[in-house]
Length: 391
Image (tube, rainbow, N blue to C red; front, side, top):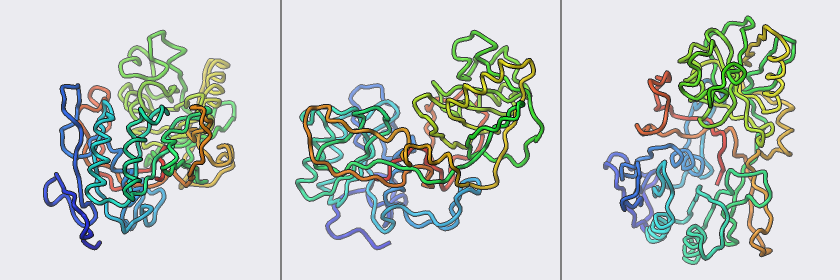
């Protein structure tokens, strides 16, 4: 990488060794004004979102990149030769409007050419929208603005960052699937996905249980920490419904309770959208409709059994065509809910199941089950994006 251009006026608020000719700037704009904020106050990425969106936009070439052996090859961002300056405006609590405005103004003053803004919120009138205001100022000074359309949808009017002076970018699918099919005792084979690949997994059918049918304990059907106490899941496949915690945390809960594996049924609105996560035990995430079918099967027999069938590598499959012509469930839909018909610059690009960088720092306050089972190192070079916008 060449050194920063002569016009660059920014600074790096990390240790001198942390910035280089790739990462040329890093600043935090989180304003400590008495709010309950968990950030350390440094530009360090404590959650991971900034790292993987930056690598999607301008990650350098990385040879032999892969995740658990999947997607091997050379990984690169959209502009691999570009410099990156990071402006931190969010923590796990919130992204505050005045922090975003301050960061955008600083980026313009520092001399950036492109502002990639992967933050969004429900559309509001432009005069009240800090993102619209900040980007309007930036584009007036010659900075190109790329904003994410958001992860909402598929409801009408769910496009975010809809100001006409920015490029609003959505995400489409590829035909890449990380299959982990579920085979039921009645012979049915159901489509599912997972990035977890155990070195060995019992090919025999295992007892299948849905905690929501066994206990009235609140949250048991979502496999929340502590709700499986008293539920016999030892050596069984456990069906859980996605809800309060993410599926990786659910897999920790199931493993801690002695489960042999897990099947996760997705949200109803997600349709056939599947998040292929790297769980801590054999897991398959299935569409909500298939989850209902599994529940019906469990109720139909006194001895429900099932197993997870892993495929050796990512594959193309007809299910990818179910995704509304290649657009994932969060592809926001546009209506002119503010009553203004505007000419728009919109774009759609591959943005699902992509390899990208992963933050090497995990914040100690991120909510996990007590005594988490997941002891895996967190400094993986790459991860698979399950819901990202290429912007």
